[in-house]
Length: 136
Image (cartoon, rainbow, N blue to C red; front, side, top):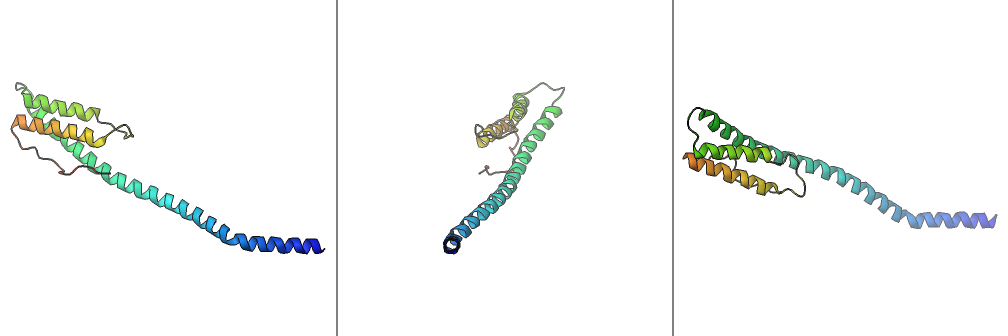
């Protein structure tokens, strides 16, 4: 009986000693899981905002290029209209999925440069929906 009481006392002391470690471990695990969830939600929100800006700018370039191409139908094709077709081609090739292999800023800069070149050839102002670059 003394062995059982001594064993019970030893287990009780062990559980008291280990209580702080268990509480710390549980707290860390719960905090880590909560942080992961909040980080995922925050990342989604920020990504969505940047995606909307990106989509708006790309849509603007596509709309402007199509308008110039359609308005010049029947007339002889100028270098500016050909440059607008190049803008459309770049937009068609623009990646729809961003991976680590894709530099979105570089691709956007190609589209912006082609659009500015087309506007220059058409002798119009290169109006843009945004004047800043994307930053992640």
